[in-house]
Length: 291
Image 1 (cartoon, rainbow, N blue to C red):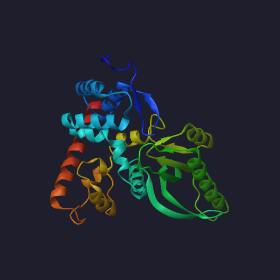
Image 2 (cartoon, helix red, strand yellow):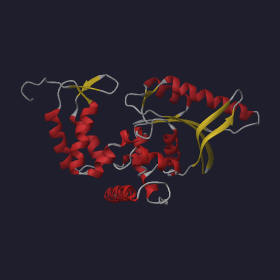
Image 3 (tube, helix red, strand yellow):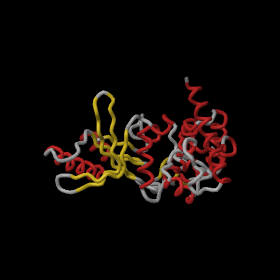
């Protein structure tokens, strides 16, 4: 214990709740982002010297990112994944596009913002995902986007999504509309215990931050390397708007698409492509190291 400091340091989460400071949590997230053991341990050691009782988690995150950027800048990008997804906002339109592109990497064909007739009313479905892998599956997907920390998927969100699913399928049972085999809710935040309990009871697929534990949204992104363009340091608000208008939401798309006519300066494009190439190269290197 450092002289003059309390035995237990409490940190303030984004939702205002208090929790104990846990250095092992920082170490774990640094390692998951790709930081080597030496760098991760050194950063944790420095953070332990700087934290104080009542420090905000966002301040700890800022300090970690600052230190990591000095040591391993491209790992710092991955460490910033949650914030990068929030920067897809403020509206949820770009997040819906991101979810659709992510699912394509998992073998789904996707449709965005389709208006589908239900028994009672029409519904705009954020994403329709279809996959023919043995049995044909069509999923209705609701995207719940938060552009500020502290939000969570609650019981009302899953109730609303499931009610829409029922209305659509009741109309389909009359032979008049599209039938959906699955109902999903995808969000960039955590889910409440009530929301997860209801989803499990109803057979809904709930994909949130760190839920399900082994295949939450962050794991799905990391597994396929489908990082949002907002993870790159050179992407500001104006650049994001131009990329989104061109249908580009993933880093890997920057290296696959013709970017010459989307209104971004040559200097900015050069920086974007350089950052994207370095991130993709590091991802490939990490994957080779895992095998």
